[in-house]
Image (cartoon, rainbow, N blue to C red; front, side, top):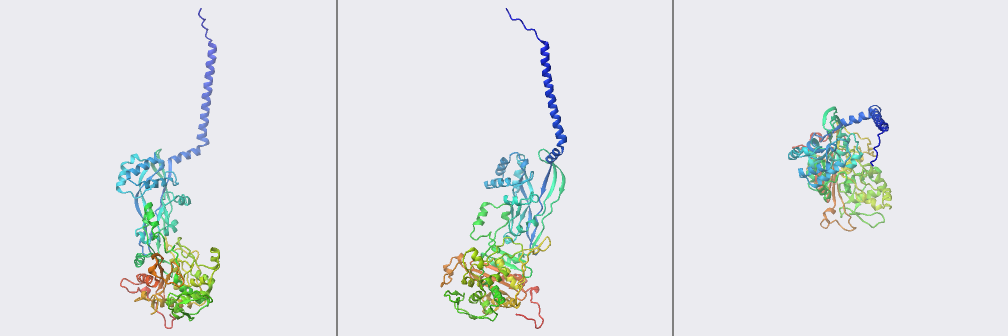
Length: 630
């Protein structure tokens, strides 16, 4: 018998449906309330915050890189300018797949694998959003065309015209003007992130580095409105950048070329100063290099070639080279002896060809092994007599000798705007105790008298010490910048002038240096032959390696790079100096014979006109009857 069919309970079903409807209504009401609350929070409570976010998504601030200041020589010849270049950039926010696009660029432009690693380095550097990163400089027309054809496949990549630093005279001023290069990660962290937004390069050496703040200028801005894809729709606000300041250097292109020609292909340096102002007229470090290689990033191969060269073209010999000065410091030692009162111009010393300390057997040889007999100060300077200056140094003692040499700037930085300058070394008893933990020996004082031993100086310091003799003790710190944006640089920490007890001592030493060049027995008389002006000079030949007692220097048995250095310092016209020159030739052997003619050739280039006559402004001033003269 079939089961009976149950009768529907309509009342129960109605209650169930109503409960479900009420639950749904409550859920919908809750969702609605939540939405209303959220809308209130977004539209009212957080209105300022979200409106700012929205505005930032729509409006972007793009930097406008300032134009770098130009650098000229004293006559207006351009030494560093800015050349337009078409460069490849990428904006990361606009690129779909950065890695794939960079690989594609490498293939399209047929670039070496080394450039791919450079791309990665550039992309890793910190930067602001929507600021393009420069990947490749100086695209050729063919490369630009290839990129234009494939533009649709490379979103975020653009070819942009930019200014790139250029050095028209290349290697001629690499060590003075210096160069700019790409900003590295360390520099990026230390730089003002606002001022350097969009800037790709910074001064690395020379004037480019020292005056970086003045040359760089101030960044400009553009506020632009963009769409969702980052494309610029319109410019809302524009602030022009402030170009960098132009710098006029005291260097003279023609004198620089004359100095380079006089030095030839020999390793060495030349620095020429105006003693009355401290202006550097020429500065040569040979061999040199092309600074343009560094502007947009030098290849590893090219850098290795420069870095590993035995001739060290990257090394600035004028500022960084430390050499024994040899006999070039004898005029300063003579000034010290006169002012300290241990000798007079008439004091004579007998030279048998060597010098011995009391109660010591060791012989300190004169370069002239047969000796010069009795010599006074004039003869000692003229003949560069070692024995006289051995004796003078011993009489002075190391403490007084150190203090006088320090007054001439030996052993410390002397320049105003050359931050690469090495301080050199003027030793003392305290220095030896602190560094060598040893006592000072009398023999070490003796050899300092002829510029040997621990003493090390730069060619710039030698030039400045000589300028002080030419200038009778008046300090004018050497500097390269003649004007920065039309204003002459100021020396905020001037050196004290050298005040002698008897100012006539300056003339005494000046006279001895003139005898070096013009006396019949002068050691460098050949270099002054036929000169239309008086020259005051001093040669120097400094040992690179020590020679044992009793042995003589033999160039044939000495390796070329172990041979003596040749040095020469001088100024002219001797009566009213207008130029001071310091020449150092590595392993040149004979200062008077090798470096002296270089000095003469540079002096002629500065003091004589095209017809070989002394320029009127350098002629000796007329003197009234009875005026003292040497």
